[in-house]
Length: 118
Image (cartoon, rainbow, N blue to C red):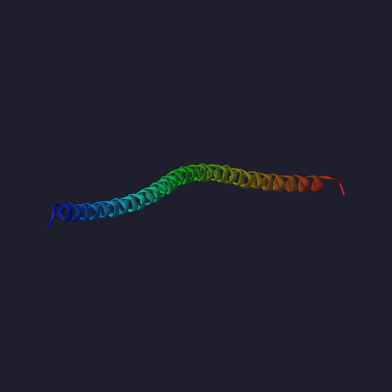
């Protein structure tokens, strides 16, 4: 083999190696692009999850507020019922007093009618 043949062989091997390196660089570039796309996708997913968590926190806060308002309303209702039952008790007492007075008036009227000459 002559020097020229050895040079050609080495040159061809070098070109082949460069082509393989170029192919590997291309594959690495494609893998990096795929990785970038996955990273972007993951970033969007994380952002969506973060938004969901924040929305969940807001909803939970609103729920607690509604529950507090409900408990307050139940307390107000209980107080109103208590006042109403107190008023009903007073009405019963007053009705009994009125019935007693009505009975007294009837007795007085009977006495008055008997005492009038007739």
